[in-house]
Length: 342
Image (cartoon, rainbow, N blue to C red; front, side, top):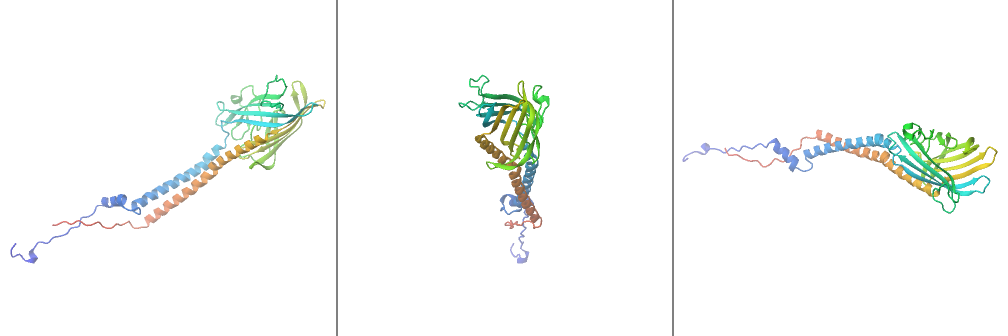
């Protein structure tokens, strides 16, 4: 307008546009740097959750999974080889070898009891015989052969005589039969002896090492027990059995015996000196060490590692949480303002 004074001219007013909370949050979470509040909160939550997860895992491994492993598995299938010498009557002594095959019957076993089928054979070690020979072997190398069915508790290893497991024809047994309990103690245990037909005392003797594996030594001493030596022949039976047990699993790594059977008239019927072969001892110790390593991993190493990782993650999450609570809200540089002309 002509003649309008400077004071009367309309003025432009700049009105800043407010930035919405969503815009700020979007900028922080999606486009911000890693030090932003959203990332810190996410990291805090992740660390706390991971910490709780690993602490729960440590407790489960230590108090549930680990103890659950101390139970005889249902897939056991072992062959034990022994050798030694024997004397029949007044004849000269001769070398012998023995084989004991023990298999678990998983179909008849359950969560508490395991059923076993065992076959054993002792032969004269002449002309490289097989593990067992027939009764009509032309060289008469068979000394004894037998089969047996029995059941034991999967943890304590004590005999179970419930007929639903072993049937009506099986011979009832007492005490330990083919292994010692998990976490074997330094104490006397009842140990089944087939010849005497009862459980004898297996007395703790001390510790010894077999191929690097610690074992507990137990000894059974049987002296002049009346026994039927063979069909129609009565006499007495004596035996000294030394058993070397890996204490955590209860596995027998070596066993020796010095047996003597004498007729009622004082004549020697059978003298037998028998023990695990050197190869069998080495194999038993190696297998036992493998089992110990696996048990140590699950029962000790993994729980400790899980505990440490869980504590570190939980402490880290708590520190981030506390510092976040004590820290002013993150601010960011104000974006360029938009102007409106009124």
